[in-house]
Image (tube, rainbow, N blue to C red; front, top):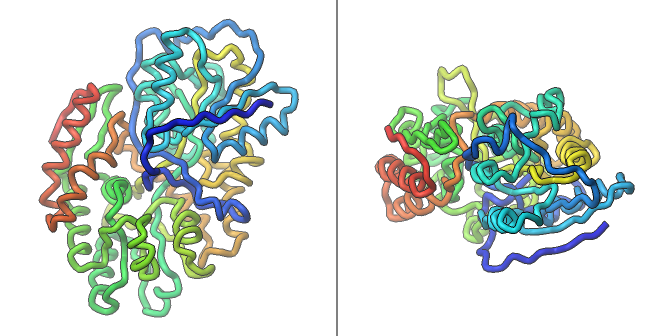
Length: 460
């Protein structure tokens, strides 16, 4: 085995969305794992380059080249340990963290020179197909490489970021489905019920503002705020309708209701406008959390890792839903993907590694820091979290349900919703404006970003 490290300079600090996982028990809890990218993009296609007309390179075998980020290095090394007959070249890179576009830049170079492509690569981003399919880089997995019976094992819509026109071009590594985190000790002490609806959630926030001022029921200061709240509310601000088409609608009831809820709770100061990763939040607000809607990885990365919340206090409940809505929906903040190169001359070994690294209990179930996208491995992973004794309740049911409830109406475009929110909404909120009043500006900004990336845009 040959392990290499490739430095990539000129990047800023990791964005919060780059964190993943309910961190696994034991040593992994201390890692403060950085990983998974945000929701973004279904890619465009190059006619005849992929899909049903995929023509593999001449299969000569040889060394299997795998690119991983530092967190997934353990996975590649474990595979090598368990498959000593496979000659591997394991290369670590930044995993496209923070949208560095390192992978796209290198693939563009390899396409020009006609060599250099890795066989399998991990990306912390969910939007790689938005360029990789068009570039002819990623192989179609459901066209004979991986059996449909295996692909059916992923959580509902987990591989949506990987699917273009019915063809699966990558596999989801982990999920970042949103749930409602809450302080079980305070809930019991104050006689409060965990809210099942957004209406009850807002009402409880208004009650907390009066009865326990200073305590929080949520946070809206991060760039992934729309992915926690607006996505879960089924706001159609990011509807990818084709390889290069998007519909942007921010005036629907599902958008305006959630904006009003956030405005109400921001005004009464039960909704923080600080980033949950900021030193200010950690110092002044972390110990004032009553409830906090957020992704699966909040449990390990925030409550256990950053906030050092004592064991037995943190509980997990289903994400609230609007009253009368019979189709539960949640958002998603992260989750990485694995891609198999269409240029691989070692498809058999590459496919075996790809399947193992995404489905194996040895890694996904027992060692992976984030909630596995493959359902069977997720059961093993959840059992380990429960056995740790950290949580106030059995987290299995709410996280499992949420994994299959990520609303499919929020797409994975090439443009970054987080960058748009940071440029459009955050400054306005910090200046005292309401999110409701900024919805038209948000719509226009999304449209402009999308057009700049070559999308046909429909606004409503």
